[in-house]
Length: 288
Image (cartoon, rainbow, N blue to C red; front, side, top):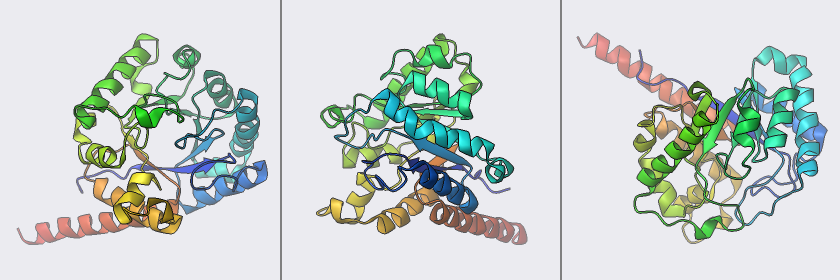
């Protein structure tokens, strides 16, 4: 057997006008549904639907606006024959407890909370009796202030410690540990160098003994590795390729999933790593 398990691929669908890489492209319900189905056809195991941008500097949206964006899409996908046949799951990307609750009622089976329960104090209470997974991300503050909160002694150690604290809070509130997934929160209250240091030391998160989701796709630190002097000038095609390369390199880790915008490129990278791993295995067997 090869020494890694293929991570789940979580396809990003931003139903927002202002997300950093694709804002406005899937704001209409029909467009979001079609894009979700397209990502599933490309190989996504999970569709992560978000109605509020968390890009640096983004302002909060009204609760009713977020819900008007995401709930019709969730309901449509949960009832769509092709989506049901694919056995893909629906994830709701939200920091709001009420939206999370309504999304699960509509058909979501995963709540992806980038704030780890810090943005809405009712999140754990709302989720504790629901039948869904809960992704606890590392977070220190909202998008308009988070860039000033990136003080760490050792970023990977500090992130792991703060995640552990949120996990303990969630479990104490009644959410079973078996339902929890952790996310290092790449891009949230971390500068370019800190994100790379964190990615390099995901072993610190592995010590927590929980499934890990990594969401590096198209983020600023990815572009920073390609064009340090012109980060904003790196287009999505280059960011997607670089994100897929990072996914391939991270397969040495024990990842539960990867959150990406470009599913097909990511899956191609994973398949190449798998082909090489199987060939190495067969070669080792022949040499004995």
